[in-house]
Image (cartoon, rainbow, N blue to C red; front, side, top):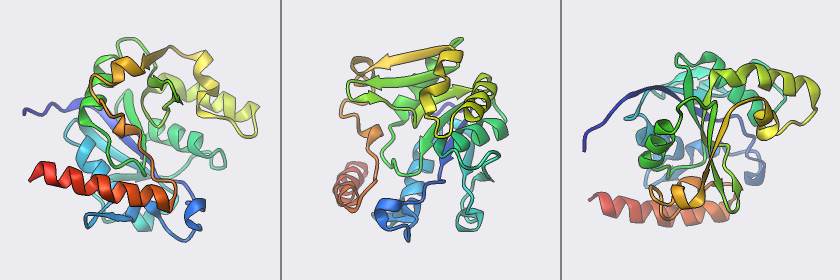
Length: 209
């Protein structure tokens, strides 16, 4: 299988406090098949993208990774702070944004979203269960709208700035063509999720053997 590196940055948001893990565990470094979750993500997306950025305010914990590390420019706005910082520091106009707790992102999905970008500022999977802002494509045109939303609201959501930019919503039927099980959107938020992820990781490793 040939690999194409797109002029698109990959931004992994790693600023969460892991509250449901007691706040004492950085879930990005939980091991699945003896490999940190964040390493799973890097290996999935890096063959497609020419730059990988991790947004974190705990840079020392990530310094051994082969990535560019950046901090929040406007801290205090949760994932929106991370999205803004990632887009700001990216060397490319477009960035694929994902969370640090989604180890099963399908490269085919990333490829599909990139090919859909055209003149859009956001290309986002919009499933029956809801939008997936942490597995989506964003352009630098989102930067100013994000800053404006952060200035207007105390706890803004990612989608609060969407009305100000061109958004392409990809429905579930389309997404399933490249990710039939929708496994790209599996997030590890609890220990129960982690136990399920261990099972999925073992299955994935067997397929690779």
